Image 1: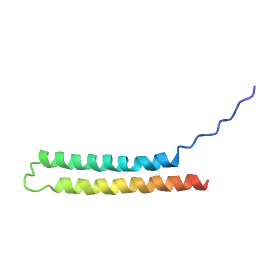
Image 2: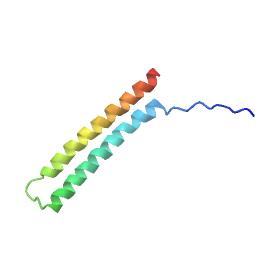
Image 3: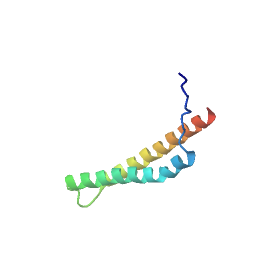
Image 4: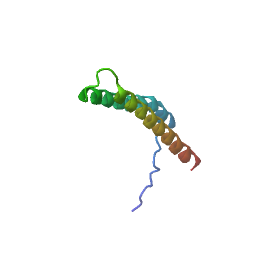
Length: 79
């Protein structure tokens, strides 16, 4: 019996790069939503410290995700 070896198909680089804005938007929105929910739960009526804090955390998480995705793309390009 002869087995055909299939090359592993790499995802299209442009498709991965095109999904990054949506991934960033969803990540930031989820963190912002959680901060807003937490402010309402803790009854912070005048200020929104949790919303601000979690939105900033969401931005940093999104940027880290972009950075790691681009690093993986560069490594696969070099290989």
